[in-house]
Image (cartoon, rainbow, N blue to C red):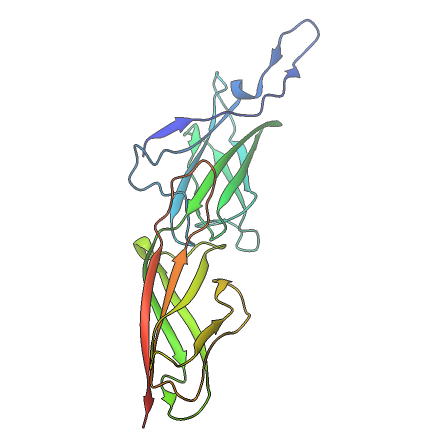
Length: 245
């Protein structure tokens, strides 16, 4: 897996009177995988994609004991944490290898994930920005699934949305509902609320008057916008409900 170098925190320490200070990047270097060159690297906020981190010692000279490195996340979780009770902290001993390459699973919250590493008292920091997940399928689920003829109807409406590559929609994805057709054309049908957050627990309801015999509802899911990342693709779907005579 190819890695690229990213900026690290630069805190200088004095190693002795009259000796030059040592910069953090002379001891520890922090990297993350590059999605432009690594097809397995997917910094996407879909609760599924993987991001590889590299923490390496740049210190020269022979070692007689392991160097212990700790890498912490501000969000998301390591794929295989050594301590399952602390999924955001990864610790390793560098014995023969000069690097460790833990992998984290991106959560569904888009935006920057801060990564901090510590080795021999030296620190490095970088950020990986999780982009919003593109969407590939939307299914409108009504309860009940039919209208009652010659009665005022209230139908609960939900949307099942699937992200690309088997992932989930990112937090902040919005759903907009609209009525595209109602029969007869003089009948009344509307959705409240017509625009909502996908993760909202507020009920969405379709209301019709007693003359409606058929109504078509459309839903459009739009991923959030994250500065510094590419635009994600939205998805739409429709559903027609008919009255039982």
